[in-house]
Image 1 (spheres, rainbow, N blue to C red):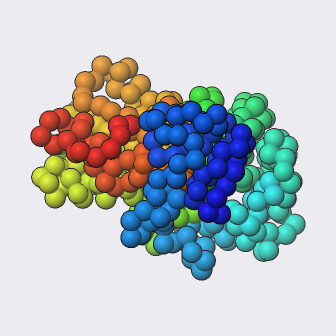
Image 2 (cartoon, one colour):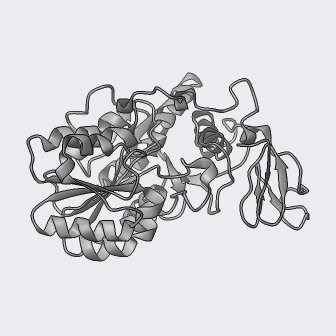
Image 3 (tube, rainbow, N blue to C red):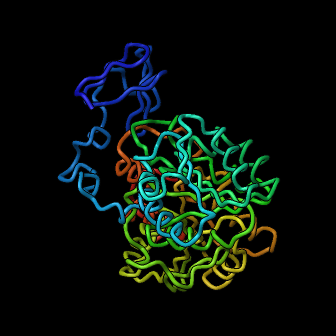
Length: 392
């Protein structure tokens, strides 16, 4: 980013970023008219160092975002490699993308199987319909693009062309959540789980790391019907080790850690941070169970009910709007069963997120380990509450 940027409406912010309609900073908005936004900040004020990337010794930047990281360490990048390998023995596999072959590394598939790779250009809706057509001919298409584009723009095609017809199309929605940072709301995908899980006959699953993604892709080859597979930004730390988990089952949650005081039910990018938060809580004498609810639909209701009954407190954690996603799914299960427990949904509040690098956004919305620990303490009540920042 340049040191000074002027956006729509003529707002100039040193070291910051602008969007049409205003500049969003750390917890407040700068209006284009020069009036103070929430928090009383006047236009032209320097954005928080948290969001300009200048705060603190590490500036809240992920050291893994430098060039040279191995593709195998990134869920968004390992799919092409894994599918290329699977395609060696399964002639049904074909791959499509919407002008993002490098961004999602489906180019790795294209290089090995060029006659089974289709780059449709910037035409996400057409891509899904084409994938459905290929599936109707007996193939298993994997269609990959940004989650914000495919889940929102191509929602009708996913529902009508894929789920309704029972076509075995696998939609890879990568760079989900707010992982595209400075690109803003148009590129953020914080509604996709709510939308996708409301579509009948559509399986919805989230990958926590590269190894689990490999397991998901392998399991998808024998799974009936359409699937939405949600991926991170390609920087998700390891949860399951170097090899794909051998006991992986779609629709069956994984209990990664036992505990008796609290259960954290997480999915996708938030699994690793939740495990780290559980370690910190354990050091303070709070026994915390951690569950990876990788499959949002069909939902493992038994694991959610066991969490409430056995630990008495449940915290859901997701990189998604708190409305309609994992938290809502757990709440529905508990309410339908009449099971009472301390309960809290933690994720992104029902708002369009502020702008900044992903690591700063995770810290701001308390979706890093320290933030999740703080929210867990608040859930458990006085005496264990943290003094940190804003509520979810």
